Image (cartoon, rainbow, N blue to C red):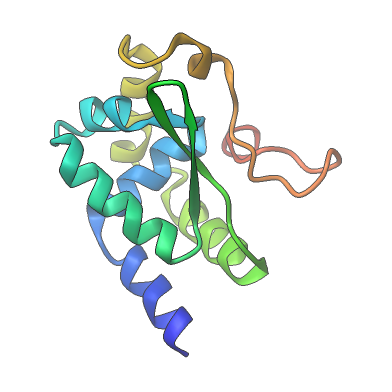
Length: 132
């Protein structure tokens, strides 16, 4: 029950939901996420840590950049993310965030070419394709 409580708490915050929306578009570095949300990098990092602790995102270092991506650690986390994205699919604020990320010109250029990797296998579409 502790893990589920942590996950619901992570999803109950608007900033963290916004971060998940952005990460559903593609992997991002903290500087991109901070610019898209008009928040400081330390604030974004704290929210990302909560999402990571809840099992929704992972991070890896690429040179100077810490890259975050959706990476649900189990089926429960995957189902909760899918429910959240389904609820946000027609939300104008979520679409505005996605569009803002598409237009950003900060962070490493190689990230702008990657799509969300939430799918479990090649037969599944990515969240970005599902939200289409």
